[in-house]
Length: 129
Image 1: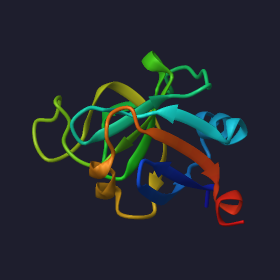
Image 2 (image 1 turned 180 degrees about the horizontal axis):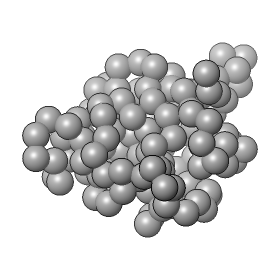
Image 3 (image 1 turned 45 degrees about the horizontal axis):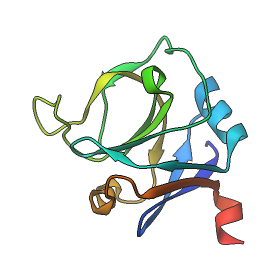
């Protein structure tokens, strides 16, 4: 089981779990992280102060609720439905992402997040203190 984080974006607060990948570890070590939301179809992404190379298992086709790191834009991505690149109902990243975790709560609540709203990633323990 990975490290748990809280994601706050606009009026939305949800819990997620990071996996054990090197990219996820770098994100964990950079917490807390604050950014400005960008929306792209049913995806929220924002630049974070983490630099990581494309992982060997990176992929553009992701599942609803998966979290990714997009090396091209040094961005943390929350996938909750189809994007402009999707052929069907599954999210499709603009280019391959390192999958770094998954939502523990319903990812579709991120549909409420608007462009430019503040997004925060914090340790779950810190969020409940």
